[in-house]
Length: 240
Image (cartoon, rainbow, N blue to C red; front, top):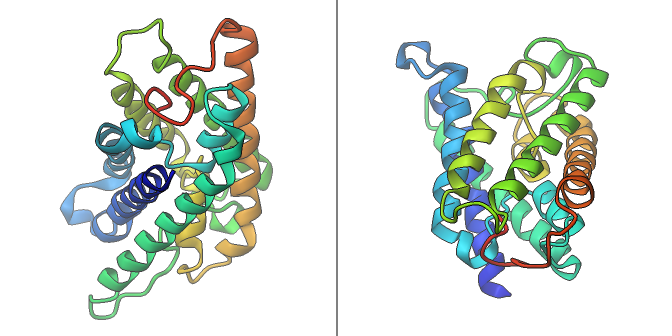
């Protein structure tokens, strides 16, 4: 179990450090040419690379909503859910803290939003709370369906991280203007406490919506699309 939790901690660290780091350190400078498309790709690459690196140890969740969805789909043990969540949040906080130290080394730098998520005034496009809630639910549900489908025993093995990484890239391309994209409560929590905005006060939505969406997507897969799926892959290889 310790190895699984360390793998989740390291994987979530990589996701937050790479994804949010691309936004804080690179996208903030237009002349570097990364833009929000580059940020979307960075998030996808973090999941793709770390799923190959440690997915065989922990299942490669790196996201409380993914862990919940896999439990709903009976691909993951409910007994391990809370420990996974704790490891994921610790990894996100560690990444955000190191990223903050690095970014603050630039003269005159201020955290601003620090790649945090939000709605209303904190939404990049000024979208409402209702818009943020709906898009986070829908996209997290879709993400779980991609994860469960690509890791099914009925599809060729070894390619799931590619599908999952590309799905996360697509999700960011869609929703960065709306919420700055969460679909991951740990990612949202890690950076919110370093932001100079009211991001912490809006964290409830970025826990509620991804968890609800993850459960919905998993339930649709498990009980509608693939009711014959077994308990294979619990807590290990094949989860994500």
